[in-house]
Image (cartoon, rainbow, N blue to C red; front, side, top):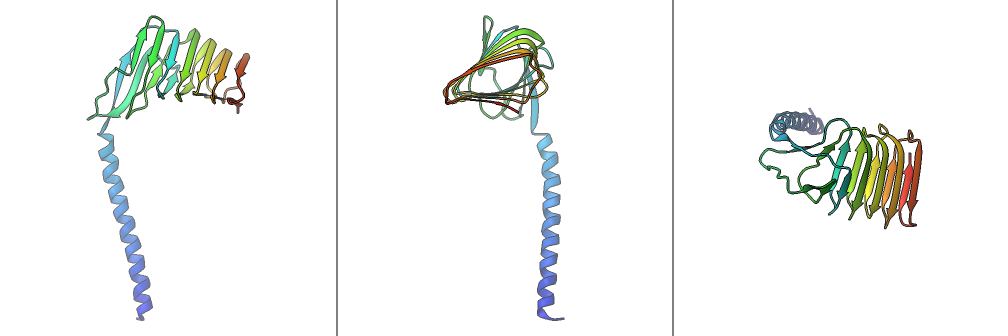
Length: 183
């Protein structure tokens, strides 16, 4: 056999061996990661206002009662210091290492205040009226919301993206640096 044939054969053996090694490593880490994470839930009293601040990021899901669901590493326990309910307002502040989901019940009216480059992703909400006020914040409305009246006020490079077209009434006030996008 020529030397070039030996080089080609060695190349294919190296590629096959590397692929097999990566496959075995991926299977090993797949089972390992399943055991590293857990879910923690935090019950919440009733509230009608949500205040997102300190560059916080979370999702709001209308499927379920009032509680947080947090998916996190088992070795990194999550405390509840990043949120607080005062009166009818839920304050949500900065947190790290997890992305919580806020589950809320069907409601008639809710106000959502978003500041300081916070981001909220909203899905499955059933409400008669949703009011959003954003100052340097980002809000995304997914296409499975059922909101009769949506009122939004956007300031200082805020963004409201709506993938939902089933609102009966939409009112958006914004300054020239903010964006409202309907997809």
